[in-house]
Structures are given as C-alpha cells and as structure tokens.
Length: 503
Image (cartoon, rainbow, N blue to C red; front, side, top):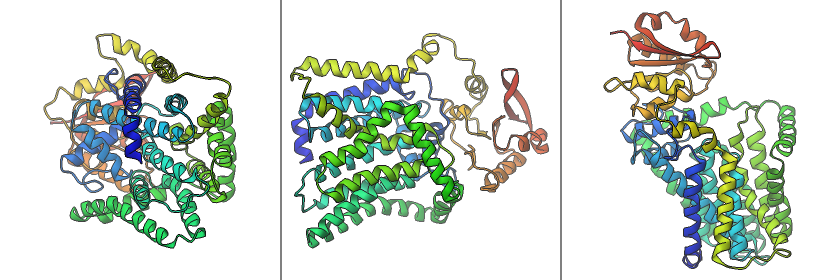
C-alpha cells in the first residue's frame, strides 16, 4: 500500500523533497551556504564517525556516551567530505524530506491533496523552532518516529481494524530499535501504540495474527541488534559498550525524588504554554483532541495520548533540559495541523492548481527562513572575504599550519569544529570531553592527564567553561610539556587557551 501511494503521489513527493533541500539550505548550518556548523555536539558526532570509519572501535579507541548509530550516520556523511558537512547536508535534507513526506501521507488519510500539502509544509516550519543548528540526534529520531506514526494512525483510523500487517510490525521493530541505539529513552514513543495494537488483537481474538506480529517485531529488533552485537563482540568491546551506553548514562541521568520530578513536569508544562504557546497548543490538539475525535477504539485513542505523555515525561522529568530535546514530540504537530486544516477547509476552499502548491511551498520556505534567521545572523560571515576572528578560526589557523596535527579539547564547545575543519583523525580515546563530572566518570580526566604527561597530542584547547578548567590550568605537567601559543579573550576575560607541545 505504501509503495502504491508513493507511485501515485510521486510528483508531490518529489516536490516535497525539493522543498526539504531548499529549507535545509537556508535553515541548517550543515548547508554549504554557511562556512561551518560550529555546534559542539555535531562536530563530536562527525569526528567520532570519521574515526570509526577509519578503523577505530567505538567506546574502546574513541569515546562518547551516545548510542552507536548516531556516529554511523555521521560516518556515512564523512565519506563525501571529511573537512566539511556537505555530506551531512545531503543526509539531513533526505531525512527532512522523509519526515515531510510521511507527514503528507498521514494527512492524506484524512484530507485531499492540497490540504494535506499544507500540513506537510507547515510541519517542518513548526519543528524548526526547536532544531537548533541542525543535525541533533533528536532530529534524526523524528524521521524514525514519523514513519511509525503514519503506520499507527493508518491502522487506528478504522474502527473495525482487526488484523494487523506483520510487515508493518517488522518496520516498527526496526525503527524503535534504531532509536534504542541512538538515544535509548526516546523509545517510549512506541510502547503504548504497540500495546494498543496487541490489546486490540487479543480482544478481537486474532491470536494467530498476534503471534505473527510478535514474531515480526522480534525479527525487526534482531535485524538492527545482531549486526551491532557482532561489531562489538568482534572488536572485544561489548562490555565497554554496555558500561558506557547503559551504565554510565544511567548514572549520569539526574532524576531526583518523585516530588521533584512532578514539580519539574508542572513547571515545564507551564513554560511550554508560555514560551512555545501556539506551537504547544497545536501539539496538544494533535496529541489529545485528534485521538479522541479521529481514532477508532478507546485503546487506540489511549495509545496515542499516552505516547505523547510518556515522551513529555521522559524529556522533562530530569533537571537538565535543552530546547532541542523537545523535537521528538513535535510529530504531534502533524495531527494538530490536520485538525486545524480539517476545520478551515469547510470555510476556505482551495482549488487543486499547481500555482497553489507553489504558493504554499513558498510561504513555508519564507516562514522557515524567518524562524531560524541563520542567513540574517550569518550574513556578514557569508558575504565577507576574510575569515571570522572568533576562537574557532583563530585557533584553527594555527593548528592547520602543522602537518598531520593531533588535538585534544578539554571541554565541549565551538573549538570541537577544529577537528572537522582541519580533518583531524583522533589519536587518543578522550580527544573530546563530554560534560561528564569527574565524580561520575573519573576515567576521562585521569586518561587526559596521562596523555599530557606522555605528550601524546600536539595541541590542547582549554576553555574556561570546562568542568575541569581549574584542575588542568594548575596542572604542573601541562606547564612542563606544553606552551601557551594563543589565547582568546571575550569581554576582557581570557576564555580559551591553546597549548602546543614542547619539542
């Protein structure tokens, strides 16, 4: 059915992918329009991805505590260009094209072409408000969610839905397992809709179909899990992977007491209404009103409502929150906009002409550009000939002069992009420093101290905002083995130090 729909809608889908590429060209710093995406997280992903594709083993030779598949995505992006994000621009644009297409296909379950097209164009514009600089793990997770979201709603739409296609369940198994190996807690999105399907099959006494679906789901899980296990087992890294991705992240998560969690959730809900206002109202329409009004039986209504609630809880239950963490529940914008458009189409009739499609896409593109305002903020950098005089370019100008330089960043900030701009392959495990306190993960700082003692890297960047700034600034062996070759000051205060190994 999906294949048939794609063939029938191929011209519209091609237009939506073109729209995605144009939207990302202006609204993501991955775009070739901008000199560099200096967001520390994505440069860390890119550097580790390159290292893995260069033969290093994740968690043993190179370190971060994220799931392995985000590094695979960035490693693939590095195959096209190792010192820029042009490869990642294509991957990101394809991902957004997939999201927008699935939003369109979901809307087509309820609306005709032109109104479904409005939903598809509006969805990414709403999501851009929380996409940060482009390329977050959450951003790619949305793609896998939105495919399952379409399949869930297609099945839930019918009040008489009995049998569930095992192939669809296989897809759910594959997609949720991919997310497990990117950011494990966000797999909660799948739990309640899948439970609703299994309950529905039980109530309708479709026992054979239930068994087939359970088997298909397990096969989907194994399709992703087995190759990953083989990779880690063959590299003698399975224990390291478990200790890093499972145990370390469990210890790192700061949840607190039940009363604190409840307080956090209330505060965050109020903040979303206050600061995200119309976006969050659209999300609530899609997450609560849509299932009640448009979905078949009570279990399926609850499945979608609880899916949103569980995502909200898992994102906001801890003390730490960054705005792009919200992206996974923005898929409910799709159903929220469907509700709004379904009401408006009774009063506003739009004819099925090509110029309306063009006009709607043009309005969406303009609104997306205005939402991000990257071109406005980066215009001087784009148009002027000389390089910016920020810390990244200032330090990179020095590092890049060396033949095959090696580097270690003792913090996680914009200077991580030096690895990308100078195409540096890490030569030590802890070449970058995720924000892990020493009390939670002492091995990183201890090993970095050892690298300094053994003079294993040529350059070291020490930012003032580093968790271990005072420790390294006063470290005697750093002064003995390295010279400060450059500093960067902001507002009269030295905020970055660049060290070079004494020869």
